[in-house]
Length: 294
Image 1: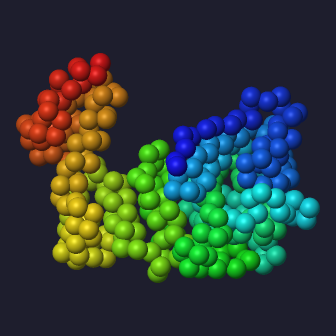
Image 2 (image 1 turned 45 degrees about the vertical axis):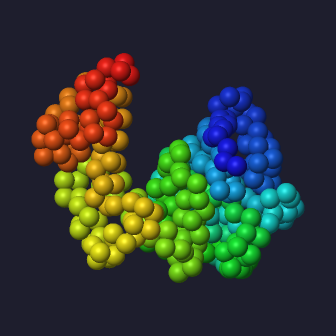
Image 3 (image 1 turned 60 degrees about the vertical axis):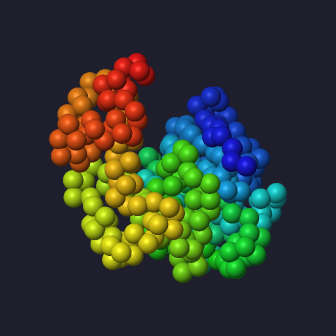
């Protein structure tokens, strides 16, 4: 069962106790490690939740280094594969096979009992997906081996988009993780998720159409429609509904946003066209819908 997001912050702890606090928190929730920092104090925020039987975690804040070697190996989370995605900033990963520099957009996969040192620079944000090794081997049919693997960026776009979502659809996190780790083993749904993520990124692009979306995915328009039809959806209908949802959320959130501005931003030919489509979807005009939530 998926769990709500919980948050832990080091700024709730006295500065002199923060490193020990961070080490203890990790030992309980991830694995034993040693933490060090050259900053005046360790200022980190960690958010964690579960989805599709996978543990998800994000870490952001001050520069620091974590060391998992020697006596720190083993423990309750030893039989897991970690997929770490650097969303922002830079850092490095060091293991027996050498040192890899990391920059925003990079990801690395490694067994939790792979002795390693991970460093993050100031302003970095890291996402971690923790996958039971048994699931990787028996359900996904792949043995990752003992070494760390730098993943190709082309396989990560979908996973990054889904990790950024607070409410991913059931199954999407696991499918995107599997596709990131082993692109050739991914199911057809992975292609749909990749296209869906690309669609959502381009909602404000006036040139977003099923044809341009298909071209960006290296597909024919007919192939794109087949991909979406397998999920009982149409690309054209989904572009419209996603744009309406985004515009509605923005109008509700920002009372200064004009309806005409929202109409233009989300690709509608006129305010009248936007209002008609809005009423068909939500049963009220944009003005009335905004008033109802005020």
